[in-house]
Image (tube, rainbow, N blue to C red):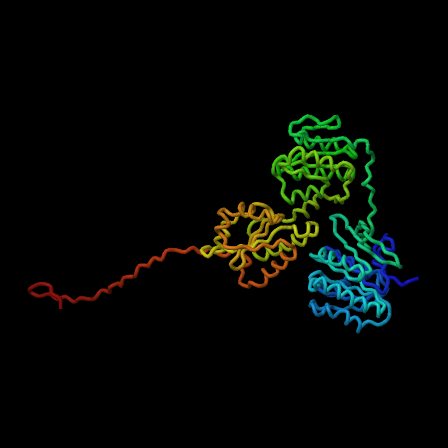
Length: 516
């Protein structure tokens, strides 16, 4: 039987978790905390292991002590420099013996990002030559913002990697997606598992199959709020119209594969509607076709994501004609909802709308809030918002421009660094920037600022935020700078010299009193 090492994930078939030497396997993980848990689970499942860490001390993976695993683990810390990464194949060739073993290389994406895609493929080839010569197995675990870009680059390295998989957090569970995995001359590709976290580590989550409705007898039924038809009568005998969304949700609790259509008239209905849809999708399964028709302009980008995450199949925007609405309705027939809907709606609301701050923040707080939002893996990559740097015209100081800035939406933040105003606009698209600035500033922004810079990709925003904290030491951090208003120059009155009294001696004569 061939020698093999395991990832240690419970209740998963061996073909998807076992690694055989010589070979190189790569796991990408969105959240660093999940990568830390997975690495400790791998360590605990081995009899012998060599640990290499970059970006974090290797001791952090071994503390607290694991209940299982090797009694003695040799570990190495790799400097976070490009040269150190390029020299790793030669370093392994010098230090490893010919004894078969598993090497765990734990790192973050900012370290791997130092190599271009071409250099990365060449680096993997050199690693493979070392692994073949030493008959060893290498498992690479990479986490952090940007791993989706790394994953796309690694998809072209099929001939160099024996396995590629991705672990992604889904609010109440984890999605483990195997792009390919080689085991005992067999290839498993394009597999997806849902995992849960137990005391012993990650394990397969056994869910009830909700993708098959109990019955298809009501598939032709349309349960709708009456305003979605714009005053028209029911289109057929299969249509059931109700006076409110509450009545629609109540009737839909008895449906299995019908089409359910809600109306949305204003932004205040978003949370109530999301709860109704979430309850329906969790209770009635994937057979329902749920639509939302926007009757007035009310949906923001973040609201659309929230409704889709709660279980909506399609959203018809305001202004779409009746023909477009009916075409969308027809396209949903026969579909099944395949996305995962988390059980905890409150946690979902918090994760999709995480910033409950708006307006001015000191520089440190601004950087912390933006970093926390951009690092949220539940939000779409490169779609979390815009970072905008605005330089005022020469006649205007940044502090004066700040008094004209009035962000109204939660998640819209502003701070000052040097001679620029920095704005972060949460869930704002690039083509909506001018509209957003028009509502934020009291005066036309083209007249207030001479130029602007915009960052919209996650890695660009994180890089600029790091520079904001380090490159300008004179930036004020605790309180806004004091406003200095120029006063007209008034010459102060000159003090007058006070005369001192002089003594006078008088004498009496026949002519009268005279001065001596």
